[in-house]
Image (cartoon, rainbow, N blue to C red; front, side, top):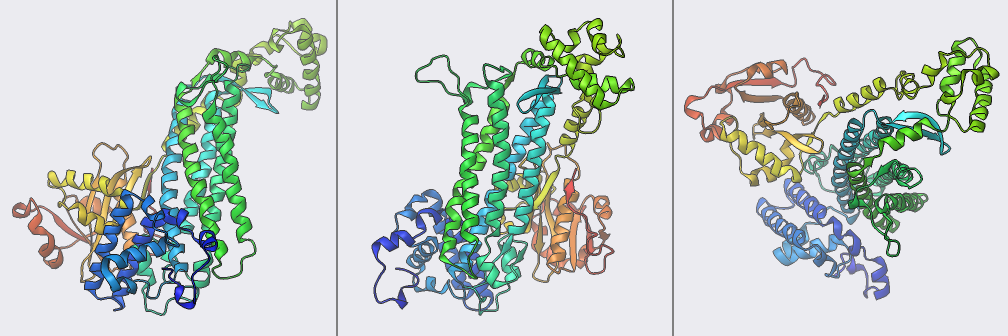
Length: 623
């Protein structure tokens, strides 16, 4: 049954129903809709719309539903529901009866879908960041492996000047750096919660929207209910990020397709990313790269379509906005698939060094060096440019390279040229001359690669449900050696919003949590770093991140029990005493392996009186 049927004396026409229903594509929001519904049920409990017992029933039923749809999401599509929200609500009612009808109190499908969609976008964008990081690493590795390989550089697809192949690699690394930066900025802006905006005017219930937002991992709640339900800037931004990044991938693909041709022969692609011809047995086609180039158009199309859909929409929600999903649902997987395929191409490529070197030496690519040589002899550049042009004509007529001309041939055009011209025209000299920042000399390219490696920062962020396994591994490891208290995985799942993690190249390498006691006291606990990681500063990054979070939550005091007080002293903690921590001692100490021989020191951090004022708590980025 439709959620809006009471107003109508008859049901919708079947053709209209098919035209109107969004379940065939928004079923992908099932997980987000269920998670958002649990958070909303909890918020309703806080304002006494639901009792705690009713909330527990709803939460249990929704978690069961989450497990069911995870096993077979296609069952949702077969249900015949209008949209994912209708499906979840109907399934809930089947499980808990009329109690399920209470869940939608104070909530509209407008703020519900806006929340679901933001959650999906955030999760997907995080996956994309990991993929971009992985591709960047593959490119740096190729640059390092091919350091010293020379390649002809092109303008207008004409040989221009020699460059190091590593320099070519790092050009695309720079593009990916910008792609990553744009996506991070987009995530920051999309990570606000519209739930509680109602249909357009806000909810009539005294929901703590900031607390609700934080329970879903958002940094804040939206500030205007009209904008909250109708804003789709985050979709446009993601599609813009995708389009620019796909353009970069397409350009790299085009370069590699050209380099792979029989005419160039600079590189050979791995068998795993190529295909053959059904007619011509000799063919090895660069299909993976061509598909990256071809799929770029689909992403561009989704971006253009979204802009056209939004360009004349009045406030607030309009059904046109249902068109926001299919394009993004196609563009984001396309983008991530192309990133993965580009990485596969990069990892499997073989560079034909002798061929690239020979090509770099041809085409009179050292002509600019000859012009610079004349400038050093006191000839104005514009005049030297003309002289070199004449010498190129001589070389072409002789079917020679410039460095192969005799001194007599040089001097027939310009008497200033002497024997010292020949070292200048050597290939290595051409490369070495480009020593300004960003140039293709070995010194500068090596500096670029080293800088790229050094800039691979440890990233610290709030934890997500898909981090639970990694968090569990870290906690259990340190619990076995008696450094942390053991915790059940189910506890980690239910308290995932307490956790922060560090990650390197998309892999979780550290964790910590901020536990808030009923009295308002907060404790940093479960702090652990992977023993195999060499990156320093992760512990500090996690503590800094949780202190910032504590300040945002208006907490007054954060405590730790530690065997490394010096570490926490550097972070601004002061010595305290366990007798001042009855909550901690009563709750956890009985679980500790060292309870009969405890050597932990109690320390605290007073957020309201500490010298760290707004902006002084450091940003948790670690080199």
